[in-house]
Length: 115
Image (cartoon, rainbow, N blue to C red; front, side, top):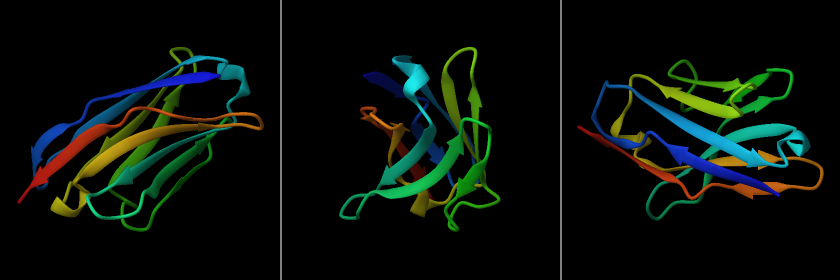
């Protein structure tokens, strides 16, 4: 099993930046893909960004050019740098680790963007 702990959420004004972190522990060698999801009140959870073991990345259209996903394989951390934040980015952000035998989630971290 893999344990994930997110941090870095908070309250920021529109146009500002935040950096989310996700610390992975446990059976990290079983991880193939790391993802960030978000869920706003009353909405379904949506995929925000993906990074594979070889560093390939993919983003939702709504965050392209503003968000950057990266990973530190030494620290077993994944990051989400969020720039030019908008009120519609307000949500709980979740880290997800996906492998052939795992699908682990963190507890989430709240991001609130004020207008």
